[in-house]
Image 1: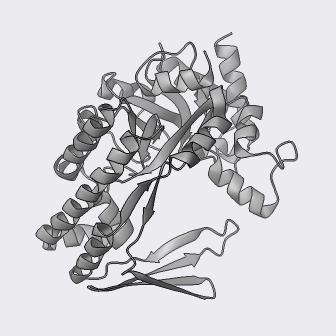
Image 2: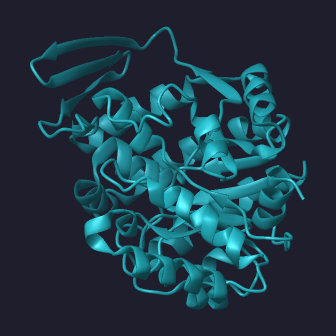
Image 3: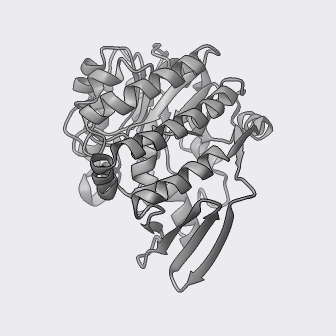
Length: 366
């Protein structure tokens, strides 16, 4: 089997001839390229070619649709030192954000000030969402898919997230968002309905796209999206969007990188085909074996390699090897599983461990 066949089979619940290893190291590559610290054997290579060189399966995120904001939304931006201020002016009001560049060596950019400061700002969000236009951008996906070939898959990673997660994570912030949901439930739910209606437009375009795998960036975590909230705001959305995608034989996947033990019984009823960036012990409170039992073979898992074990100081080589072998043993007979990161190779990781996992797999399957 090719790595493309293995990944598509694993993500759709099937059993490939061997478990594919699809490392996500975009963060590691971005930081180390900027710092000029990419190991010499990989320097100058594309991400896809590095995956090939370490013996992995390519997991390439690519565009498939585009979006255009209304001309009635005026966006202005200014930079002050390490702070980036952005203002969005609309006919119904204005909102603003502030992002800040971290002082530490990765120079990551963090959202420090969210758009929504008061409930009245939600009408501005609704205006911007309602007046956004989605359009096909299939050519860019086709090009990315051709570059991957049979060495893995290209997928669309930017499908609209659960509206209530999008509102609280991106527009308001989790703490203030949860308070606002309690104090102004109707306004929050009205805003979520607007996002859902617009999401249908995007998912219909994605269903017609050449992308076989469609993924959301939900960052599912029961500590922010509790089982009660997930049942009310998550399940109906996933079921609605999965129906659109499944009519065109797509694989529907969600980014579930948080603590999800108590969500899994509902996730298996959600219409999702797979969850990705799935973290287990020591970054979560369950093992891969327990997770698979809770999902009852109805939803595939992509994950199983916690980011923290890629750092040499956190785990020595022998324990690392034993850990990977135990994961492989625990997922046998190997149906509905893709070995992947949870959720990224850290910027300061021992990158040789990415290739070491490929070597362990070669030995495991003889």
